[in-house]
Image 1 (tube, rainbow, N blue to C red):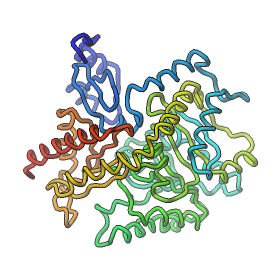
Image 2 (cartoon, rainbow, N blue to C red):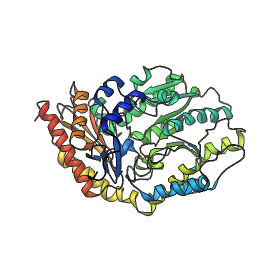
Image 3 (cartoon, one colour):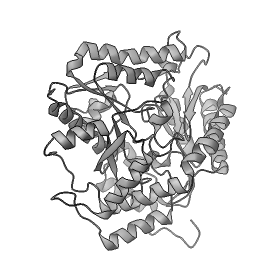
Length: 460
C-alpha cells in the first residue's frame, strides 16, 4: 500500500465494527475481539496487504483456495461479463444455461473417463452433504436401503454442516452437538504417530485393514461408503504410505462399499496431478470438489459421480429430490471456466508436477531435514507439512506440540508469512502459480519462524 493508498477507515474502526456484529469461524470470539483481527484489504499474486500496509506472503492460498493466486483480471472479467449477460437463474423447472453447460463440458474433459455427471453446490461442505444423500439414494434405488452407514476417519475434515461434521473426525466439532447418526470412523493413516515398529508400507496395510475390520463389525450389508481425503488437510496434512490407498480400494470393492474421495483441497492441481486421487493411484466412485474449482474467487463446489452411479440415478432413480437455489450459479460457472482454462492453457498443473512442486519439496527437506524441532517433512506438489518432534529417531512428540505450533504460526504472521498450525504440524500450500522466488521466500520465512520457536522453547 503506497502513501497515496491510505485506508478508507482506520484498522481500529474496522475491528470495532467487526467485533460488534461478526462471529468468526473456529475462534474464541471474546479473545479475538480483545486482540482485534487483521484487516486484509488487497491481494496480488501470493501477496496480501493489511489495512496498515503490512505485506504478507500467503503460504496457504487462503484456505487451500487461491490456486491461481490473487488479482487475476481474467477471472474478474469473466465474472463481470456474466453479470451483465445473465447474473442469475436457477437449475429448477426444466432449465439450464450456457455457463453451466460449458463448465460441465470443460470439467469432464479434465477428469478421468470414469466420471460423467456433476451436482453443483456452493461449497465443499454442501458437496459432502449432497454426497450423503446421493449415496444413500443410490443404494435405495438398488433395493438395499439398509446400506446407509458412512465410514470416515478420525481427524478427517469434510466441512462444518451437520452431515459433513459427522463425516469428519474432529472430536471438538462433534462436541458442539447435532451431528447425524449412522456415521462411523477409523484411524487416520498417520505413520509418524501410530506406526509402532512397522515400516511405512507395513503400516499402510495395517491402517487399511481397520476399514475391513470396521465393515465386518458393522456388517457389509449396512455400510454405504467410505469417505476420505486422499491426504488429510485440516487434520494435519497427513500423507498416507503408498500401500494404503490400493488396499483401501480393494477392500471397498470386495465388500460392495462405495469409495468416495474428498478432493476439496487436493483437486485442481495441488499435488501436480489434476486430482489428488490420481497421484495416490486409486479410482473413487465420487469426488467432492470446491476451493480450487474457482480459485476461491467465488463460492462453488460440486459432487462428481462415476458413470456407474450416474446411470443408476438417471435411468432408475426417478425424481432426484434435492436442489439448491444457487446450484450452477451463472457467475460462479463463468469464473470456474476461466479458472480451469488458465490452469490448463498456462501449463500450471504440469509445472507443479515437474518443476515448482519438486523444488518446494527439495528446499524443505534441505532446510528442515535435520532441524532440532522437526521430526518429519511430508508433502508432494505444492502442499507440505513439518512435524514437530522431541526426538526424530524414536518419533517422540512434544507434550506441548500444539502450543509450539500455535506460537510458530503467530511468529509467522509477525514475519509477514501466513502458514497454518494443526495437531503439532506446520502446514503450507502456496498458490500453484508460485515462482522459485516465491518458494524461496516461503521457505526462508518458515525457517525464521521455526528457528524463533525453537529458541523460545529452548530447542536451539
